[in-house]
Image (tube, rainbow, N blue to C red; front, side, top):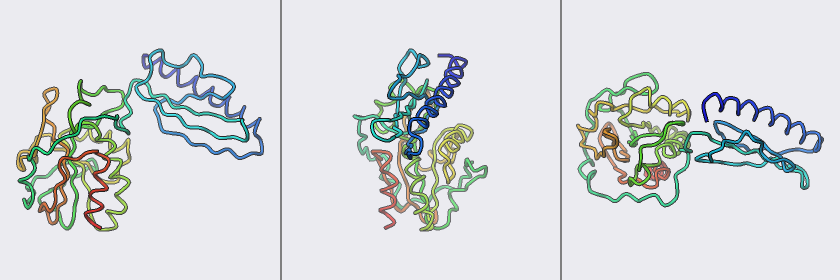
Length: 267
């Protein structure tokens, strides 16, 4: 499906949604409706009495979520979300390979972070070697971008998949960590513009730092792997105090459990 066809599909979907909403409101007037919707790029709607129209893509979408608008009795209004030409990076597939501890992070405990200014998605540089107090730096390989396929075989690389769920988990944990005086930083080898897409899409309340030149990675000898000619940091998390590493979480799996591990450290 081309971009033009997608936009036309979206317009038809919105028109159909308005029609169905009026239909339900008419049939269930005076009765309260509970609406639950999941975010998605392109929504379409259908009721119990009519199926989704011919605006559906001919090829099945990579991911599909559905939610239900519950009416009275057997009168229900379903809102489904269909994602076109993108993967749902908010969830991780089942049966992902589990990364094994290869000992590549054993040397980090007790080390001081190097004095390297890294650009953050908040528009300022952060010198990780001069952090005061407690901080968490979670390093991840690479986030997916909606509409851009992941590298071939990405899900078969142990520990590679799950960067977006990990960031979402830190977003949820951030209020508790902030209340405890803990700073949070994401870090990867992608450029700042690439990372800003993630930060804006997820509305992250903390900066993501770019180590595009691999200065931070090389200074600490962080474990890496190479995909499509790009050097990526294996997923690991460092808890630091005054820029000295106090605890290391490696390997991290599943990725969205990492923030809970950090919270338990500060209990």
